[in-house]
Length: 114
Length: 136
Image (tube, rainbow over all chains, first blue to last red; front, side, top):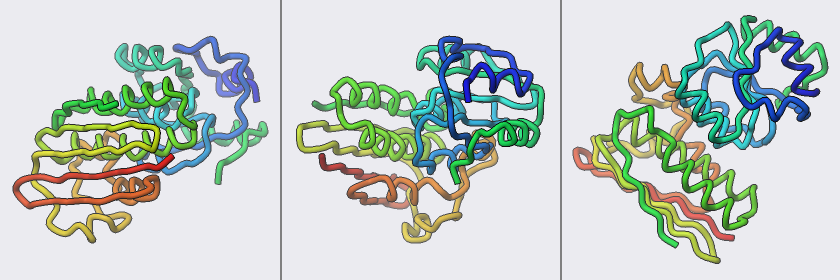
């Protein structure tokens, strides 16, 4: 799935990392528990989370994934944007809940890792 | 090559800074991305542990053509029962740590899972040292 299409499906706003809009992502993982995200062996998935803090960005960085979708319109701080930009990480913000984001994207063909 | 970083306990804004810099160095050295990922996942978990549980710590990374050797030495409360601490799901993390997305008792088992060789030494009231090694 193209990131641009994914963003439209969740009615999202791109906050940084526009250079990834034409990238393609095949898998997603949804969690607020970063410890769980760090056990994922796949790289290049989109992380769907309601956790809007610096550690969500760090976890994406360490997991080798440049795609992050923050749900429920949680506020993304300037520090988060700076850290994401420094690491070329895309952040999409959606007002949808994590359940709705995951449901919409799963229905549209985005695959689960497990 | 030897790298050294200081880590302050309780400072979640900087948690991951050392891991990030070591990751960038490993990528510059053209090390297999699969090994890089295993190193940085273990390293980041261990760095978060210092921030979450200790007062301060020092991370050293030795990188040579044979592998990577990480040492994370902290001054902190120490671990009274290492076997228990290694049990998946066991955690003594504070509410603040849990709000950061950690503290589910998955860190030490995940470090072990991602390491070629992993050893913990700890003294209650003094601190904990983790040795995490990889062979190329």
